[in-house]
Length: 322
Image (cartoon, rainbow, N blue to C red; front, side, top):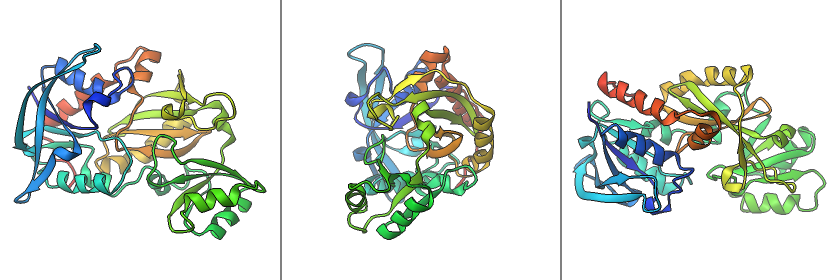
């Protein structure tokens, strides 16, 4: 069955076709002769209780001039069989408003990946706290005395992160006694006005941060992200981390099995989780990446499995969570 697919994403010209997961999802869809349409957040709007978009049909190829627009239209998003929400973070108020619009789509007619309600009620940092037995000691607070007390309780080393950050931006390592500790906490909490996540520093991060791609609760593959040398502890590719081949351990599989029921319940079909030293540290559901890196290292084609799933759901006329 030929499907009509719309991809909500960042400006297409900013795409790195050698690393971008959305690109290979679109290319695989096109290769299967599905219609592939493109739009950005600015192209979304609602009218009379319906979600609409000004969309451009697009043709893709692996080349310097990798995209070409074929036509443009303004249509209700229920015109499509599948709408992919692939806008990269940050998870800011503009992103939330876009989710409100996508929530108007009747999911008896159109599958939205990931479910906008699940995305609205989730946060990539906070979502892990639904599984306290899987995560390292963690506090979410804006009070600096609470954060400093937590630092002492866990042995004097922690990482602090903004709840709306991405790609390792705004992430700091703090050690008790460091003369810059107060300055860092003042800065990241905006003088105690902004909530942050503080987490015990996991020393095993020196061995890498494992990104695991999960489809409908089932792990498809993983890549180890290694921090660049010179004392850097952030392993994100955006922070200069490099990919390395890895395998799923029993602990990795245990983590995936433990979180799978909630992912399915929330309609978070396609996610990427981060595991460090056997701890779950993040659940990335907005626009998870890592597929191309896994493919190159392991000789796989994960995007094919993802499109298989979407085709199966559409063929079964799947009723997604409301």
